[in-house]
Length: 316
Image (cartoon, rainbow, N blue to C red):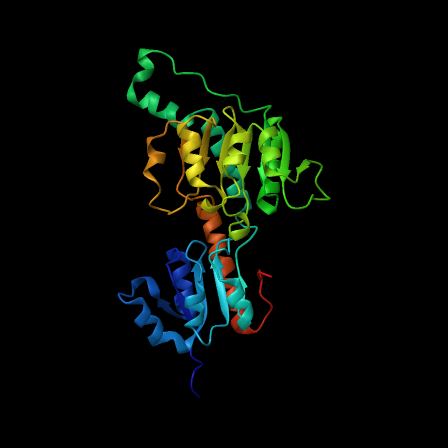
């Protein structure tokens, strides 16, 4: 009796080795990132490929989906699906999964950490001590964190987790979303500029995509004002980066802490010249514990699909 062939899975980019090893044991993996001619590689293997195992920042374009006639599933290592052509998937009945919830705590922790690092000037303080400048006199004063008003733009799983974290800082919290959350006692803003005008710190955790592209624009930054701070742990696309750079360079906002950028990882070099920013390399979920949980969830979704079971975390 002939053994059943392992399902063929296309991977646009690598996962950590602790995921690659068990996946290689279960599936025939096609490593697109290693192919010198990607179009030729896809054309050669396309007929057999039944799933794409991608990462959030790599996604799955409409062009890639169209090139895979027998594609059944796109499994995303990450929460954001803005890099996946969901319309193309729906049109062909291709299922999509992601890895929600397992990274909520890490991203929320980072949002709090970036807020502290920015206002208490922790990276600058570290450099001040290392350089020996402390011996020449005290460092300039920082900004108090507790007791401020914080507006959270986006109030899904991660946004609500950020609010819970910050509740221990005796802060006044509010959120911006399309509709108010019936189960939240926090103040709701239907206008992002209005919330920016109200708050001291604006934390952005909105999903990416066209609906939120550049939503933090010059109007919002003007409302935030010269004593206001921006923290972005969502997507680089949610902030008008040109307007942000102008606001930072002109001191029209106090500062920004950014985990995400346009054109990652080759970010605009103007950021590196600023002393009122904290820069972080899109690493909100970057702990070993969470990355292991994310990979395990991708693998569980793949296993469920090929076994004919309900998907664990399907994207509607």
